[in-house]
Length: 202
Image (cartoon, rainbow, N blue to C red; front, side):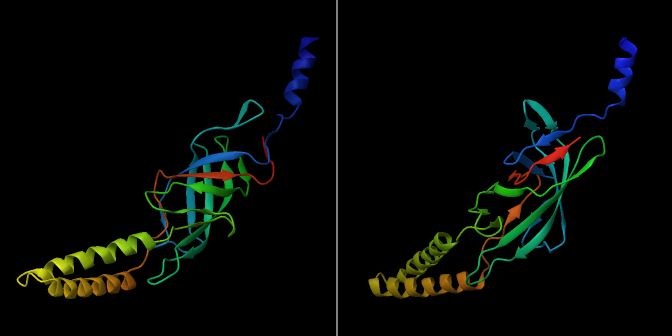
């Protein structure tokens, strides 16, 4: 009696698991991507940083390969315009060789010490933060240096004031001629993505 049951169980296909809608997955960058050098169509390679678990079981093991593609690149402007990067996740490859097509979208990324973040209002693009504070600090730095130089040898507020004005002008010119920060996703950086629809995994 046991033999027919065993043969029947071998003949049945393996039950498919499912990544439910709304599941989060933490991915780790294998290669680096920057709005400074990236082009639309460039491939992005990642791995699952931790297992994807659903229903109390591991559906996708850690270190599974994920591939995406750069779908939009905008470099940071010199006067205005923040850097933007859009990555479209396409496939997940399991250790068995099974390739699963999927389209989760990013919801957060490593800030890398900057203000870069995922903007959910713009098709989940990764954008760099504003440079207003950094630019103001740079102008103030040059203004202070100019005031110190202007006051040398004169010991008057007039000289210091002229120096400060010149320094502020130099600082402003440098800010206007310098691009803002780019979006940088370095090797090892993590990205949190969420599945908008269920994905079957066998």
